Structures are given as C-alpha cells and as structure tokens.
Image (cartoon, rainbow, N blue to C red; front, side):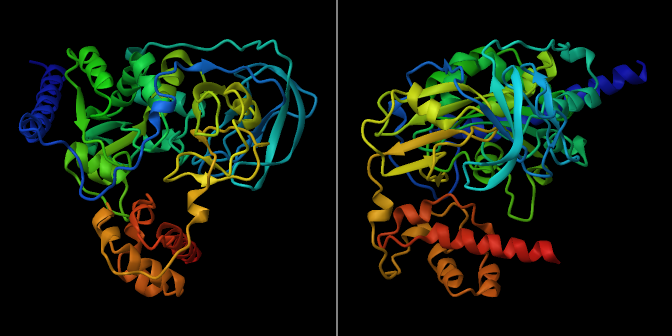
Length: 470
C-alpha cells in the first residue's frame, strides 16, 4: 500500500473514531431522556409564534442604499468607487482594510450618490457609501466552483473575497475564524442552529426552507479540517428541523445532528460548545483552543454561496416582529436597505411603539431612529408597544441568589454589579467578572429589577479598554 492510500486510511479511521466518541458520549444520555444542555439559564416567553410560520419574503428596496464601511470587527473597508460611478449588483465597492476586515459589495445596481458619514443602528456616524438604486438590479457574472476541485487555501480565499462575516451579531470576519493556527487540532465544526433568542425566527425559516444550503456551507467548512466532525446543534423545540437534518445527513459520515435542550442562552458560544461537545472554554480562550469552530446558520449559508457559487455577501434574513407590528415577518433583505422600509413591508405599526430593539429582547439594544441601514450583522427589529423595563424601578438587592442560579457563566452577578457601580475594577476581575457573557439572564430574574447585565457590561468594556492600552 502506497503512502497516500495509507494516509487516507488513517485519516478515515480517525474521523470514525471521533464520530464514535461523540455518539457514545451523548447517545446514551439521549436514550435516557437527558437533553444536551448547560447549567443555569432561563425560559423567557419566546414570542416566536408571531413569525415562525410565515415564509421568508424577498424585499426590494425603494430608496437609496447605505453601506457603512465598518460593519464588521476589524479595520474599516476602503472605498474603491467614487461619487458618480455606476455599479452593478455584486460589484466590489469597498476592499478589506486589512487581514481582520471584510470587503463590501453593492446589493443593487445604480449610481454612487455620495461617500459620507451616515448614522448607523448603534447611533454612531460612520463613513458610508450611498448608492441610488436604479431599480434594474443588473448583476455581475460570478465564478462558481466545485468544492472537490478547490484547495483549502482557495476555499478560504473565496470566503475572504466574498466578504463573509459572523452574522449572529459579532461581525467577526469568517475567513479569520476558518484559519486557526493549528487546523489539525480542530475536532468539531458546529453550526449554531439553536436560535435561543426570543422572537427571532430567521434561522428557523432557513432551516425549514433551505436546509440543503446549510449543509452545503458546513461541508465547505469541513473541507478545511481533516480531523473534524460537523455538528448541527438544534434546540428540541425545533423537532421538524431535527428531522429534516437527520434525513439529509443520514449518509454523511462526518455530520451529526445534536438535539439540545430548549433553554436560553443555549446558542451562546460557550454554552453551545459545552452542550454539544462537553468541552469548556472561558473568557481567555477562543473556540479553536477547545478544538471547535462555531458559525451561525446565516453565516454558514453565506460560506456556501461564496465558495460554491462565487457570490459575495449581499443579503441576509431579518426578523421584523413584536406586538407593535401589524404583520410580523422574516425578510430576505439586500444589505443597505433602510429599516423604515422593512417596517412598511411588515404592515407598519399598530400603534407607536414605546420600545424598538435591534436584535432580540435579551441581547439586543434599543434604538431611537429607524432611518438607518441594515448591515451584515442586522438580525432582527423588535417593536414593542410597552417598555416594561423602563417602567420598572430598581430596588435594593435582597440576596435571594436567583441571579446566581440563572447565570450560565457561574459567577455572582449581584456582587459583580456592585463592584461595577463602585468602579472597583480589581475586585470585579478577581471575582471573574470577565466570565460574564452578557446574556441578560440575571437582569431577567432579579426581583429587585436591578440592571445587573448593563452594569457588568459597562465594567467589562472598561477593563478591556484598559487591557488594550497596555
């Protein structure tokens, strides 16, 4: 037997060994009725019934499209077009500003109207490219490829060229995540199909409508890691998705479907890794340090589009929902579309909402103006008739311990919030304040209505800022 055949046989045996270990470790627990999960967490009203049964609808923008040059972690993108230029759908309009950066592409055809600061969803004025939509949607020609014909370097290059970033909210450039220092030590490539954030249903609709694209994107990622097994990690309140994935992967030796317990924040990276693999990471580690790579559903679809079809990231699915919306829906949105237009597509407001949140109610943030563009990280727009949080009056801590019981990070939120209030950074760090994942569980359960998460989050930002100065 030659060296190539011997190596292929050894790799095949190793993959089978990994698969068997995972199956043995968790298969027994599933048979016994024990769900894969983590310690702590909560069960808030999920609000998913408002939009989960409505198919994804394509939205064509009516007005100008705005592309902020900073819609990812890392260096801002650099414009490669000028005012007055005519562009096509899928054309590069801003190149990556460095390795940890991502290019930006036009999602419509039209004319570059301006390159100027525009307000974004977080309230900052960010240098942006403004394109006047001509309504023709003329498109560039893409360069499709067969996965089997691509080298690992070519796969990463196509992801990088496509401008793919983490679309779960972080916006970390995906080509960086897929390029760990020691790729041979990656054992698991996990697709975050949990979608534990209340009200959000965009991932669910993707799993129902286009599961093949999710599996295709996962295969593209697995092609980079010879020793890895793919895991589709789905909460058990999405049994229809579990069945679809199991049917589509029944002949796939390298892909497993893990049915996780429905609990918030099951989709948080640390909790997801622990629940689906049994491995632990802390604030000093990256998932790769535990042999894992994690991407969410929309990101994995974008990986497949970039690698196989040669299409850059130009669209994303956005949930527009809440009790203030007449017709909550999931929309396939061209990046750069104004939020006002999405509200109109969802039937407008029943009445003026007291609270509008970008993202979900647990980890999203309030916004004061809808005249802002959607970006690569725009997951949802939640519009609520009543702002129950603002109506609550915080009182003194009663030392009930409910925040400790709910905390998935296994810290003492009430104590950390007190340190934060007093500006005591040293005590905050010593008591593991950096292990907070800012999920909001402690604030949710606190009978005193203390803004625990907000206080801890603010202190974490200050500690990280201090570390960057050193």
